[in-house]
Length: 107
Image (cartoon, rainbow, N blue to C red; front, side, top):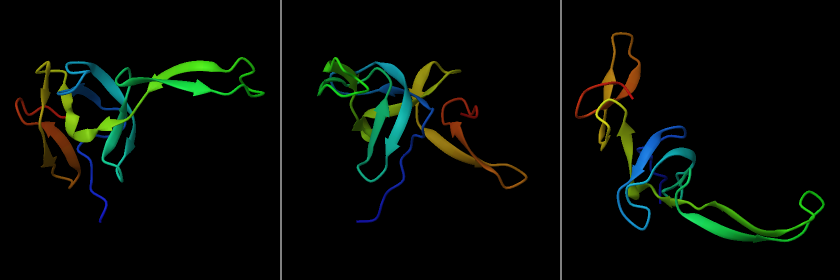
């Protein structure tokens, strides 16, 4: 199966549109295109049990973000103050940029 492109990139501000974290907003920390998942700051928090190591002699339970499906998030437009769909715009020089479908501002 060919790898599909995601509609979000690392560094985008996104809003979760479904699931237990619906309505939460956060920054995309990392993308996993092969799995169609993204890691969003403060969303889908999981408890990871860590073994004691030299770097972490205490060990214990660490709370961290878990990946969520990219379908469950939408890019947040700071001008519209809403989650929006994105479109592409090509300028005079041939550079492609993403725009908000509602207000047309560059994301």
